[in-house]
Length: 312
Length: 291
Image 1: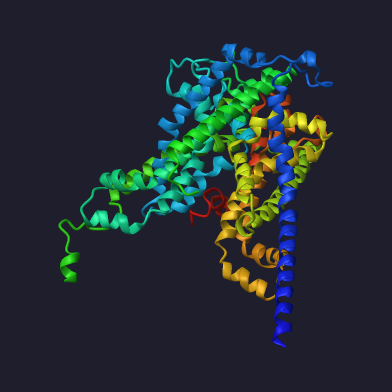
Image 2: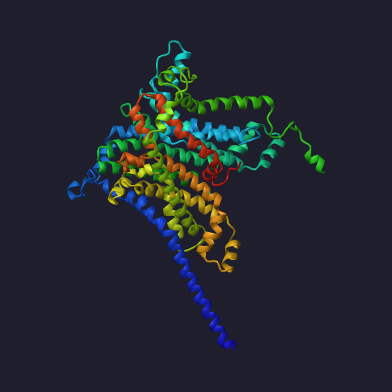
């Protein structure tokens, strides 16, 4: 009996195994393919294609022919263009502003609201985060009023100082990037604050207590426990702030369209103005590829250098 | 032994509690910050119920010529506003449903069905985390045109879904991984297949995570400006961010009207936010920040 039964059992289990394998692959195909197709078609393929378009002079109509081939000339034109380098410079201005003002401000608020037992801290958090959920268009329009010559800022300053000379918050080339930085800070500090708060919650209360019992002052506590423990979050927010500065578009497009005379041009507004609007799609693709490479190189090197110890 | 350990050199009077003046200082600082944050919003409200003349002269004043409800009613009675509102609703619902369904299915595979090459595919998908739509806007525009999707809702929905997928998958994968294996084994022993496990056990359990991902997509879809600007040529198809820009172009310096439009758009955002704040924060911080 057992001589016959044993192979039979083996056979069914092998068949089961095979059926299980088939069902596994069916599930994988069914669940993974639709999403991956959308991702390939609308993320990877366009990005790859822009590398190809960037080698041609193409207005977007009709097929691309050999006569349109320009090699790397689009890139050379781009790197020869002063306006492009101004746009890069403006991104660095935004990055510097983020590092020196926006992130410390967000961190300070997170420490103020996120720690201890401040009454009403939950409500405060909800309010401080509100600008982040407004659309960029709404935020920018709101500030377009605040910063316009007859807007909130000038009216208030006018009533405070009798001899006040109107400041062109958006029309003065020396000031416009500062104004844009202010708007971006208003809009985005809440996001960084929330990340810091999450990081703060991850720090064990026992550690704080232990340090206090040992007689540490609040400043020492901050310097030797809170900030080091928060350092993964801080590194993440710096990463996101840099990416955001290179990829900013809507707020500037609504406030100044990159003006006055390119005084607030960013790479994305440059791309829109000198690539898409004038139908120089080959040249625009070169801008897109450059922005893509900047992002990728920065991301990879930053992650390798500063975010290595994170197991995510 | 125990009492001597607890003895401190300088026992602080209260642990982790502020003295009165520190608390007062904190409130003064916070009041200042709140003023900066809410100032523009309060100004918008105060402008929206007055005439432009009153508003420009005294940005933060009260109405002296009666409340100008017409600023609001003119917008709320215009068909173009409701048209844009409907368009925004369609785009947002489309983006959110498609993103959450595709992402949860993908996350299920990435979290719970190991196979050769899975990590490679996941890494390719993760590249997408680095690039918001704006980086690839030009090639996407060309792609949309080649597919004949210019002036269609799909031309807006599909790219936004595609660019939102990596973020959603990463968040959901984390949540799916946290569900204990024993549960899955038990389900399989009870004769449940993978697909049934996904629909009847995993999805119901992951509802908070799905809500987190969903609310982020609602915000992204509702606010998107650049892609509809390029893809939708027909003003009848424009969502609200384009609608308000068109309105601003039309009424230029009529700031009171523009403020009314801004307030009208802020109200649903704030209401939605207040109801979903928990999920938004969960989504952004990967579930680390609570109450």
